[in-house]
Length: 532
Image (cartoon, rainbow, N blue to C red; front, side, top):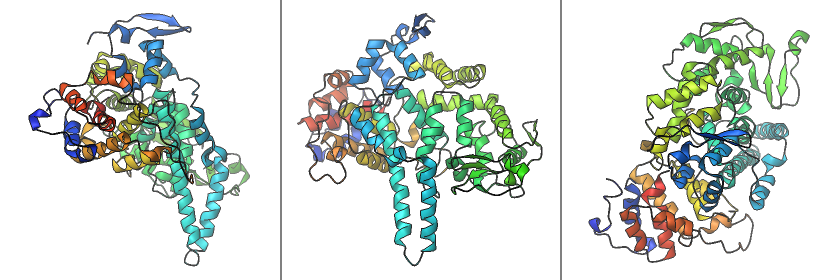
């Protein structure tokens, strides 16, 4: 059923108060909601900026809904001032991100911001050991330790959400989330809850719009990944293949791309000795090995645990010499045509369609290989393609996109003070931050998120936002929180103008709303708000 074919009258629905409109919400939510670009360029700030998007007469707000976490009046004003192509160029290059003072203050006050990561992890390890010794005698120490891990995980998730909502570098924030999902780590294993914030901050975000080789290397060398996929247990004569397998299957080449079980085993040998050390002391070893020992925070390369024999991976001999083997292998994997295809297809699924054409993926993969894994260059080849332009407005939002886009629209210019409701909504919608247990990450395809149950829960989120959710502005331990601002929806000229482009069925529902809160709920629950 299409949006245009859906009218409320057809179903005989009588609009009721907002507390009694779940049936209407389900129907709204279940409804489904090209010119050839010219190769023109001009010079802006000494850098070539194409005119492809302007030449194709792309709808600016539809473009915003795809390359940002959600269009709002502020981002629309910024795009129109710069022009679509220049705005895209700015997003691909990244800028110094200045957050609203109230948002930056929240991030600055976090433990994960204030404390050096290695010191934090060493202190946590001391607490864990003490709690373990007191187990059965004083279990409060163990509970306190677990609560601290959860608190640090919430800080990391909050920081990500605040940046997603308020950062001007929207494409960088989207790509940070994309790569966090690509290099997925489940928060329920060991002490990963305390590791994930640093993984995003030091491994993912600085490389999200950089070079894939550098991004891959940063993930391999981070303790969060090494612990999650058991490489901290991988040692000579005691091989653990878990990480090596996922490194080839999920992070680079993909399933069925030509590597063998033997390649996995040889890669596992390369990765021996790469692990985690939360103790401040350096392990004792012979002088010749000590020279090869590497420590960076709580990451360590321990040569005592490394297999120094020669390896053969993808028909290439890797001579045993310790840490330098890794760079050789990362270069080998990142330059594989299969890797270029795998990464390009995944990007196209995220940004274009559940079923991108082979022609588009091949074009992106070719650019990947030509630029040695330059991520912005690959993205640009996709963003300027006719297939991407034709897809605007049709990609179904996963829960993260739905929640963040709703907040960006509803509270544009008003800094939220508590992401707790947002985290709860994501949990309710099945996309908890770093909650995917398997290393493949959350699906970006519509079939994973378009069930009737999911749509009903999204309507509950829409009602909560429409009713001016006070939890978003409640500061912990604050006796009397200030009156929260009203969502900038029904009274926003930008939103009202956008609603005029909605389907006849949605516009009829909005016209029959009995209150501003009801109008807001109908808008946020509309089929058009389910897509980007």
